[in-house]
Length: 316
Length: 244
Image (cartoon, rainbow over all chains, first blue to last red; front, side):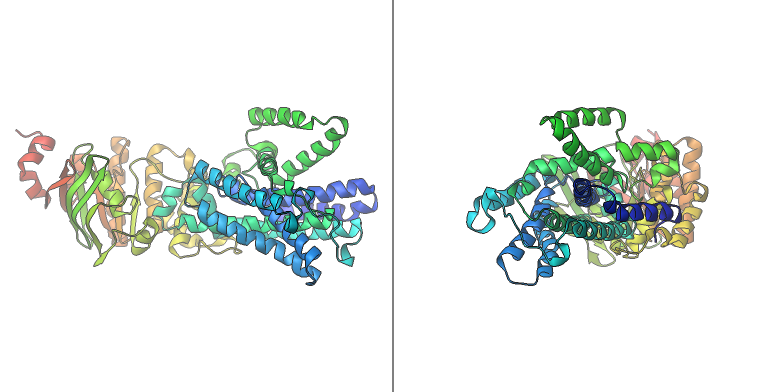
């Protein structure tokens, strides 16, 4: 399923991540879990940005929609708790389908602008509809199933779900659909000429990406037990975009690295100064100038130079 | 097989195609000639659906295809190559062709099957027929210009077309490459039973390979006929053959 030479290291990494919470302080366990959630979010965005070449500028909305869906269902309904966990990604994907259906009619920058507008609309609704969403107070203290009662349990739950999602994304990206998507990214006009319905494929990609963003939103709630309207604000979307860029958006795992870097920067530099974004800005400028293909892209080139390498980027 | 009737297309005030007529019979090799700006590429863009016609009919195997989007027209059996190289520069040569074969076999929406091992035989057979097997795993964007033009044709073959439209297949090629490419096109047409519609500036090529020639001028069809008839046409003699 996964190429053999990667299989061993991945198993080792997973095992290390599984036993890590036994040895590290609570705070670090929390940060790691947050990195996993954010990684999944960045990976989901990269399906459409890095592999699909779409300007998905407001991906945070679908993260927020997933989170709010599960939060509202757990808080306001007596449905079984797991129903909320399943509903989150599905509602996110439905919103993704609606917004995507409108956006794929436009191309490139116009796609991005329309998405920012429509996404901001949802953000405003969430922010203003006090009686339902709690407005800018958000929804604190969301009840959790007993299985997720401790941080350690949440950690394992998040880790397992993220790994499963990453495997599914990996399979999708190397399928004929994934290949077609990358071909569309490189040359949509030619794709139409070889019989590929470009818009349809882009829309499917958006639905897949928004579904996984919804999963990330659900996991966020499992970790934080609260939601707030900032999850849908455009600055978060920009941050996810930066993660993809930083990690390397033509690589498979780049966004994970990008998410880890940003979360770590925010956490550890944020301790010393509230101007951590200044550091982020400088790091970004350096990356754009010196590692235009992102950190992961840089390492791939370093270890495996040559044409074959470039050819398969986006597949790994 | 293909019948174009009184086709019009204007951009703003400019009539790019203005009453074009064209008949392509099954198994024929048909050339469209005309000076730069005569509307040849626009005509091809109209046939393949990349542009929408203003008026007129495009009938392919008895069906009007003038309202269909490009991907539907492709599925009806019309593939094309482009005058200006139009490939997937970041993918390997193999995947450039494979993506077309997958699309042809309606597999591009399969989500969980690894694409790497799919339609390998079909793809390799196309690569072999254009002599690209040894280049299969190189990056398409790093091929020479001449090879990229050949790859254009290989991608188009991936859709198993009945009608192959080639927009200046030898543009920018050296004389050696040009004659090799025309040999290749002839061979492919025979091997695969293709019908070919192409446009080309080199009159030697056109008159040596085409079975029927359509002459375009300022968007309209001046004449279509056998090479010998077209050769006698006074406009063609003046504009192309240098006979006063």
